[in-house]
Image 1 (cartoon, rainbow, N blue to C red):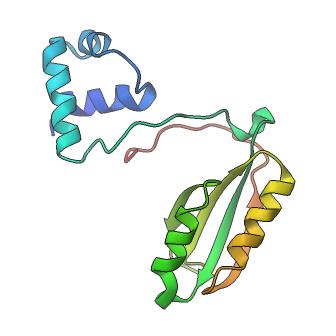
Image 2 (cartoon, helix red, strand yellow):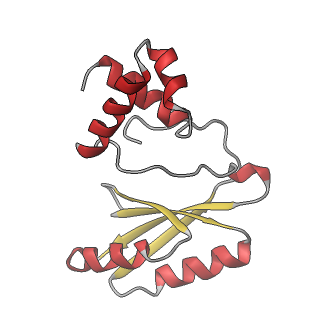
Length: 146
């Protein structure tokens, strides 16, 4: 991966729907070169997919929370699979310290959030949970690995 590939990735992080011709103008390459570079990045697994970005939680349309989980390490794989099957969980992170996992949750209402947190707490192998509601988003940018 070279600097042009990195430029293309940065542009796609900001707007994955930008046409190849517009990307080509920004990075100074031919449209066909940009298309080939994107295809190569996809084949190599550097680009794993495209997604939507929803309104931030502070727009009032989404309730967002971080749930920290302490788990039985022998049950980690089954717990992660169960979390992955909950559509309200948009991200799951492994961490060090007092907790093993952080689940990033988005729902439409506090009642829905309460039900999701109850489902998480009821999973076999979850020893302890602590959750924190997100009150507002001060800023958000795509992470380098996204």
